[in-house]
Image (cartoon, rainbow, N blue to C red; front, top):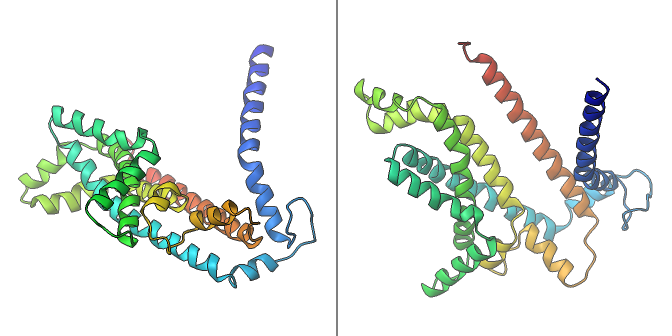
Length: 268
């Protein structure tokens, strides 16, 4: 019993240490977003000045807006294409499925710099000017494989015969897809969409290679300042805190809805 209790204590201690290392920097950042000091480590008293000054900083606001526009636009496109791709792969033959699944994993395993350079060379070869569309294509290429990976487990949990059964009962292929298959994989679709937004928000490499130089996102804005050895605006601490709390809220809502959905399922 003593050995088991000691092993349990060590396991819990290890988990707590890992969580501390992961979340301590974020907690420090959040704490210092409520003081107007320019140097983290010096507390000037509780203040909301950084949050007030955040919305007055035009460069940060423009970069934030651009970042979210790209993230949500690419996530919508990636979710639609990735969901259709996952369904297509699922209903393919054995050889085609194995080939397509292998090809779909290459972009995930491949270095992001390789993808960025490949896209850049492709656009230059065809004489395409770098603009919002090229940036959108880059982010879609980055996130589609993760949507496929999110939807695929839900398809594997589904009865593979319900699509054909729906068509046998008179449904067209499109209706069978929209009314029978899609409702079964909605949790995976939502997860893929959230993952796409998250990956796009903090991407720098593909953004830097596929954007118009005048189009700033948060990642390129921060890199532009730090590369010139300039100090980051303190109001960025307020912005990152707001993004962290938004991500936390989305995660809690998704988990809550997932538990409710599991609770509504009939017991077998």
